[in-house]
Length: 84
Image 1 (cartoon, rainbow, N blue to C red):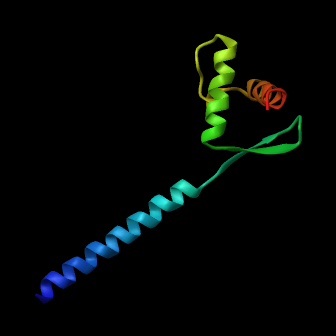
Image 2 (image 1 turned 90 degrees about the vertical axis):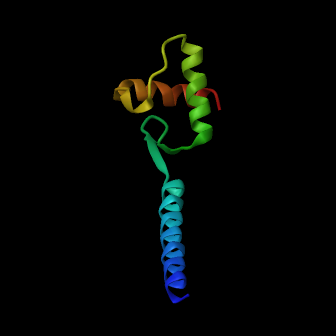
């Protein structure tokens, strides 16, 4: 009986640790500074939708934001301010 209780406690502790790590990953925010407009933008689910819309309007193959050079990133933020 005591062995069962010890195993259960370890399992509960492991689950709590896992949940806290997953929670930290979800709450982390990535933010980008827009030089031209002097403001910050948080990259979240809504921004992903808007970013995909940006690529749809350009009729070009989709590219990840992180693969864009700084000039292309600035072009996106300029478009973003025009289409809020």
